[in-house]
Length: 128
Image (cartoon, rainbow, N blue to C red; front, side):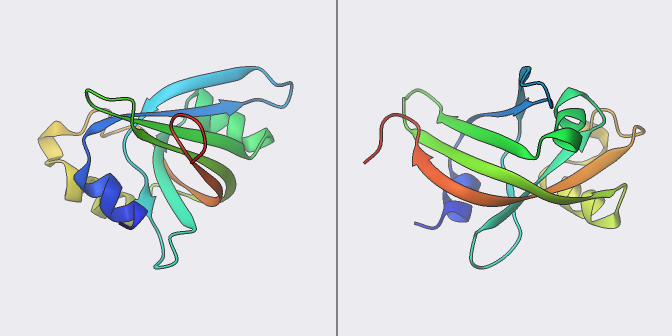
């Protein structure tokens, strides 16, 4: 199964971990990644201008951990930030595909679509 199909069909919780330029780590709950291309080597996340986004301005490395509901199955995606867009129409399209406009918290604050290269994919626990 392709990773994009896995994330579309599997329920669970995702955590994005970032660190600032001094190595101070942050972790935050994030939705599933948006896959950008057919090769599935690039993803994007919609971010508010908060700690995770600020960290990525000085340290492009991140890890996205996804744990399936009611199990210890899932994936870890090791990522490198490659770029971003602010308040683009693509953000609205991606958000609409997941939520109705009434359900979108923080709809008025600036949003960033942050792009990442997937450097490595590992299972949630161990290496198979």
